[in-house]
Image (cartoon, rainbow, N blue to C red; front, side, top):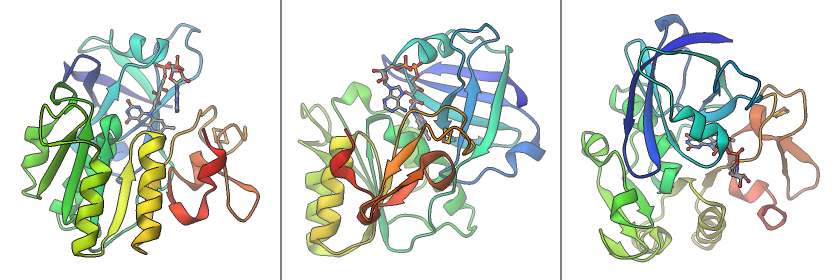
Length: 257
Ligand SMILES: Cc1cc2nc3c(=O)[nH]c(=O)nc-3n(C[C@H](O)[C@H](O)[C@H](O)COP(=O)(O)OP(=O)(O)OC[C@H]3O[C@@H](n4cnc5c(N)ncnc54)[C@H](O)[C@@H]3O)c2cc1C
Ligand code: FES
């Protein structure tokens, strides 16, 4: 486990928070986009298991996570005060694949993992910038970090279910329109129904489609077998060590609910 100190804790929408953790540069230099951390919410026994969050951004000796309140762990996380010490395990999982000519598709809090990818692509390391970012949410109030995203000067397409910002409807409609014009690979993170639709679109347009999956995680390091993802060819892989990003055509999405 590593230690850090809360450097910033900011509400971004009703249920979404940005948490900055200051730690050593030695730890942060190993982080790659797409990897995640597991953070121990507090030093009491409950919640016992550290919760996983993707690295959202990195700045000198700070890294950031963007999280949505779901249950007791994230509720407890939202109570952390600036200056408090936190314990975390990192970096975990595999980085995103290195893609050229691709688009990002984020649904809701799925935007969290892409900030660091944009930062790395912007600093001209091996990750390349996407051609466009497609970002959907239920309504305008749930679209977060727009100012940060706009810093990268990458076309940003917005959709909201209620039409309060951007296109009225699902972000997958906009992705499909884009692919009709030009075939591009897709890197997607968001709710399971969105990922299933993205997989269908990717198959229809014959583009490489990568999905960032979520399961319940326990150990986070490949021991407990608590995070299995079923494969189409049979058998399983483990999200914590083989993922969280997978080629859509390889995983059996039908059996995941
Ligand atoms: C690799 C990985 C990276 C993640 N990155 C982020 C991130 O950057 N930002 C973010 O907000 N969230 C992220 N998550 C999801 C986050 O870890 C969960 O929302 C969090 O652990 C819930 O904890 P809790 O104690 O608040 O909720 P709990 O009390 O444990 O559960 C509350 C509700 O959420 C559901 N739930 C809990 N965990 C998951 C899960 N992993 N998948 C699906 N449903 C779940 C439960 O069924 C329950 O209904 C990530 C998950 C994984 C596996
Ligand atoms: S969480 Fe234990 S094996 Fe993946």
